[in-house]
Image 1: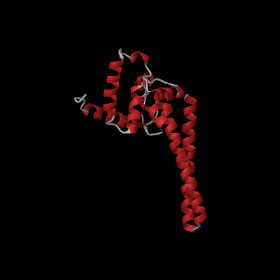
Image 2: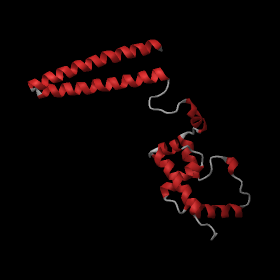
Image 3: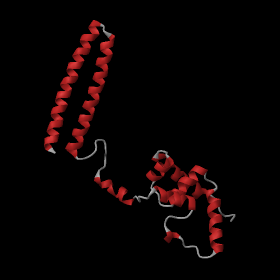
Image 4: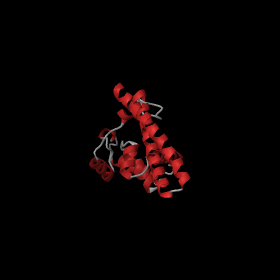
Length: 178
């Protein structure tokens, strides 16, 4: 690892000298006024700058052992341990069936209680839009927000906001009429 770090630093040094020589060429071309060559040199400069940026990123990652810009590392591992990975076909089955993914959550005994439970649930979920209802049902069925975002092809932040908005709407819903 240390050898690789040394090679990256040496490459960074050489790339910076390449950038300096390109900047000298750009100054010389500006004096001559050759616009075509100036455009090509500016593109080259942009590419070399991206190389430098990538090398600095890699060097920082290799020297610290963490992704640059990340404030947390391995201590966030528990987030990944809580995620439940489910096959896409199983997700579709859960959504189509309308049942909970976890069979042990089924605790309603009689048909009357089940009908009442469905009535209350449906009346509460009626305050949600169709998209919110889909997201919230997937969330209740144990899908992680990133899985919901992948499935629905929306940003995961939107999923988090939707879940929070759904929970707020449900908390504010009046079910005293039932």
